[in-house]
Amino acid sequence: MTDIHNASAVPSLPAMKIYDWYDGPYPARVRIALAEKGLLSEVEFIPVNLWKGEHKKPEFLAINYSGTLPVFSAE
Ligand SMILES: N[C@@H](CCC(=O)N[C@@H](CS)C(=O)NCC(=O)O)C(=O)O
Image (cartoon, rainbow, N blue to C red; front, side, top):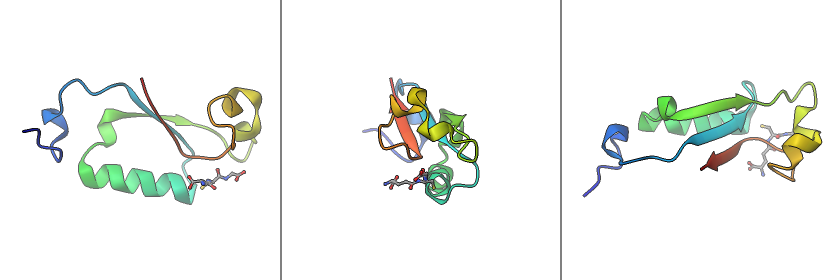
C-alpha cells in the first residue's frame, strides 16, 4: 500500500506545476497544504504576475480561461 503522506514513497509522480503569485491568498492556501504534506519540493512553481496583469493575457487564458490563480497542471 502506498504511504500517501511520504512523497518519496509515491511512485513516478507526474511533473506537477502550479501557476501562482507570491502574495495571492488562494495560492498561499495551496502552498500551505503542500508544505503540510512535505510536497513543496515536488512541485514547480511558475510565477504569474498579477500586478502586471499576466493572468489576463492570452497565453495564460489558454491555460485557465477564468484568468485566476492558482492553476495546477500535471503532465
Ligand atoms: N475560484 C478561484 C478563484 C481564485 C482567485 O480569485 N485567485 C485570485 C488570486 S488569490 C486571482 O487570481 N485574482 C485575479 C482576478 O480575479 O483577476 C479559486 O478558488 O481558485
